[in-house]
Length: 215
Image 1 (tube, rainbow, N blue to C red):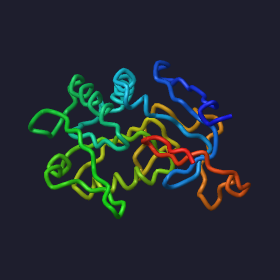
Image 2: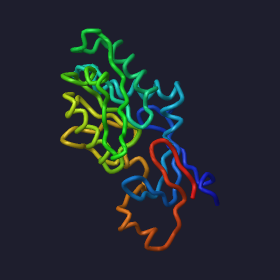
Image 3: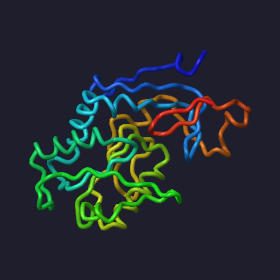
Image 4: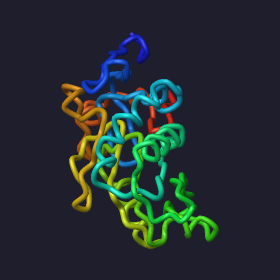
């Protein structure tokens, strides 16, 4: 049976119109090996689902947080745009003199560092920032992103991810549409401790938040 034939669809508890596709198997990410590939691409790329996700995320900020900038990782700009719209419709307080919410995406340099160019810095320095990601499996990308935002002078107000296997990073709760508990037997392992590798089971694919490449 191929990887695609093993697909399991998981509707979100918050809104059953949001649907995650999960594929059991043996997969490698940048930081770990996992036993499920979670296909988040339709959720973050289809405008209908992206808008529904934004409506869920805004609940965490509309009554208690000021937001000036949304930092989008993993290709989450469509959700970021809808979240900005939801925030402004809700009348969120902002330090931004333009009375709008900035949506920015960092670059990853050849050393794997997260950087923002000089012309973007003003959208981070002394601004209230929400970090938006597709997934947080080990928390390493979240931690690097938070540290980068703080380096450029931003004040991280919250972290939102479509899927998370961690509850908080750097003392900041990770709000999500899907929690690891929603994918019953989801596991992630250090590559050196992966039981599938010890069984000499081949990888099905190399995966990240942008998709998968079969092996």
